[in-house]
Image (cartoon, rainbow, N blue to C red; front, side):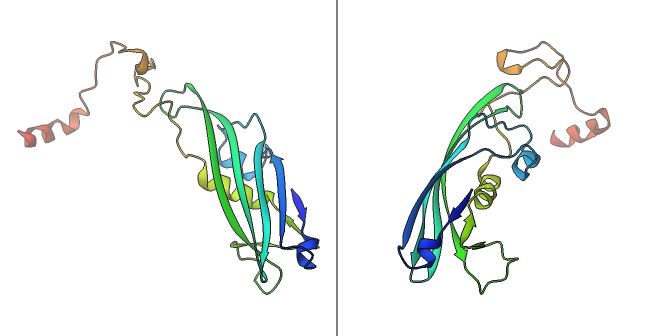
Length: 168
């Protein structure tokens, strides 16, 4: 989402509101790092760009719904998330390699880049269907949340059996 901030740069106003929907690209960074997360509806971002005596920043409130599989039992999980972020805007005088800023190009800023950066930070690395998820049996693959499978529980590596005598 490219946003034209010409009125702020010309001094006509000190605040501009924006609202947009964003769906991460299938070949983008978010999809590459979180291939098991599916965004069925676009991510909603609402916020503003503000100029306070030459210090410009964006503020955005983001809400999203996603679907993924539980990391332990592979059952489907639906998640909802709301978060906010702020990012500084630079209009020159700062090295373009600095990731702390959004850079103005042709009187416009790209709002999708900071949104993707924040998504990478807030999306859970591991999603569980519930906190006490028991996962799958390593022998037969049964979902242990539905009950015991009846498989013999492993007694551990026989080469380490001698270590059990140290606890006695």
